[in-house]
Length: 499
Image (cartoon, rainbow, N blue to C red; front, top):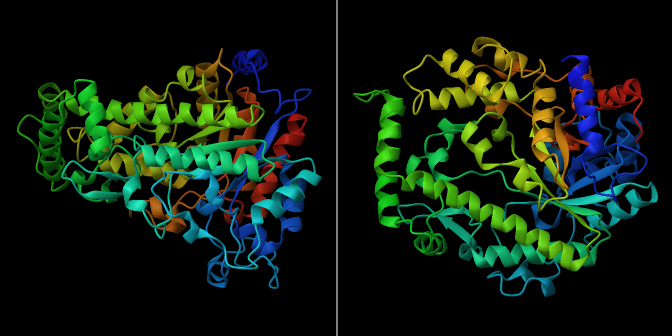
């Protein structure tokens, strides 16, 4: 990274239209994600003290409504202190991040009265928001792509695989699910004093999922369980001239190909050629993948309209999950020039530390499917080239993470892509995101990449040098070692940033 690149990145940030509610005299947005565990475990004021003093946090991104885990004594007992100080007599135990108000959820297919809180259970979102507002902090609830398992009627919202089996995930094209999310947006705006709302859907389509083009791709169940092929998606496909019968046949053949590759059986003409043969014979494979993403983009636009119709000053944002930093096909479906037209901000998960084990897991997966003709190291180097990275080789990336200039390059790419739109790019910064689940058994936890305070300082510096107007400290406050969180403040002070 040279001086010219730094100046160009800074100039790009200055030229990009920013949401006025978030920017004042070039102040930077320092946001942090948190669920209900931290405020209950330590107490609200202590949490706010820690994040304000260590990292100059001025924006809270809070898991909200039923999406945040309910706090119980059992949940607290499992939490790792990581330098945090627990308040054993917290009166907040049992609360959730916000309550569902049924009047906003008409014709959603759910009986949300069953999710009403027990008498005396506190509304942590309300208490946390009130305390944050006194400190001048902004409040942005996070809505995750999930519906509680115990919600009566949940089955009406779910996706189906091409074999007709019901999945556990919600269909983005389902009218019940769309009305549910629209109700969530109105509920949060009318029931709480919020500055914005961020929707988080860490998903991709059936074609890339079947091929295992994701971290943990090998461990994601049978290939035929990919989604969505429900009645609503079949109807929309028919309107667009996409044959479900042809798509089903194509996915049946793709499933056989993946199952054989997982068993170590090389196709006669090789992996790459065979995948292309399937795509040429069944173009519906890619058409169905694109349809899934089109449905998601329609949902994004619906949520934007709902928020602006309810209260125009509330900002709407999205989270782009970290698979975009390693899957070129998913990157192709996420065009910042388009997404920036109907989002006020976009949080891009640029996870450098856990990114090492994750990209290693991706290579393990696709070395048995689309790219099985190549040695795994060559597959990784191919991805580095097409994604514009210069990181560690496969035999070290799990231990080192993506810590050269990965954050700078990804932040700059997103900033350049969104230039000319209204959207702010907020890089998601990895502070102690767990890696043990993502390591594919290639390295024990003791050998996986570990976050340090110096790492955090370095990646925060890279994000701002690339021109970012702010950052989102991720994934959850309760996961973070407090000393590592201080690395954010180290970078801010050294750069002389206004917060």
